[in-house]
Length: 384
Image (cartoon, rainbow, N blue to C red; front, side, top):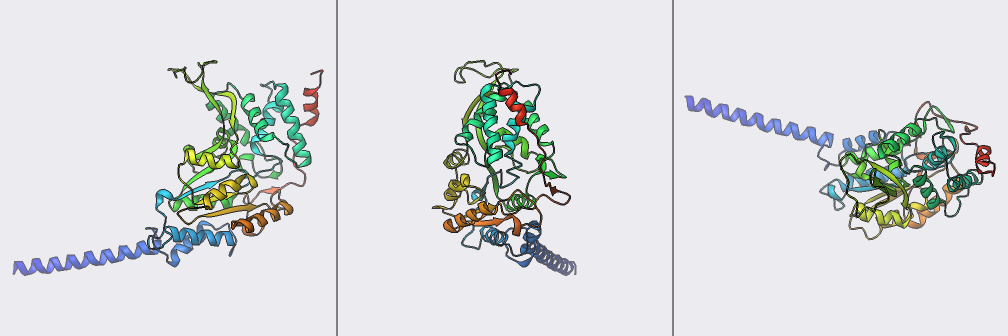
């Protein structure tokens, strides 16, 4: 009798175990938590993750379809997590590019014109003068990429990295010039923040590959994008130790009590082919997704989509919103044409996004003037 009772108990326990396993499997399938299902619930989750994108937007539809395919082990386009790498430009791709100019250019102008603790050199003031020409004409001066980089490096030379990070973060808290309701540091495109979060939730390593100084990017994105510092790549300047002086880095040894400082020497502007080179140096693997907004990102797009052993895509933002953003219909049309020629996917700020900066943010009819040409002319005058 006892053996029969034990048999019955064992059968009941086994049945309960089977039922529990079936229920657990059903729950996992519904949530899509194993990343391998292609059920409707998974698609709804993606729609929610990209809720700030308009219904039927091509870029959103293609991105969701792509992610569902490459995360499904049963799909021929499956990509193992270690190779799910996405690279993003920053200015004009993740955040506002022209208000009225790039964030790093404005930071430089603030340093040489508005910072009472710093006396700018003649060379730095000349760079500032050329940036004013850019603001007034919309034409980027030839050679400005490296000249501005050198200006940033020299104007902050000797500053400790921790202090420079604090300086960037303090400046990002100042009001946006052309908008009410946000600071410079809040001028990130909310739909693109969703893209970053969506990719990371699906096993992607997200990198920023920017033409802006690496240390400026770190300070600007910290607290807004959950991207590790070692996945932020930008233009570079030399770093030294506080006790190093003029001694070469090959002969100086970092000592107890030393701190890292900006050495004042500009090294490389991370644009065009330099983006490809730095991706190879610092990531060491070919990414499968690329997001950009200008011709400075074309080389990165081609690198990602050419000869890739995995299915790959490139997206380019078209700055076609002239009401909520400082857009240009002409530039946007040129970008669409480039996308058609190369097989890249265009993103329309105007048509694909329900919002850009969020509720409560409005574009000013007349942007605030932050820098004075008159003050610059006075600094450049012989009397100065």
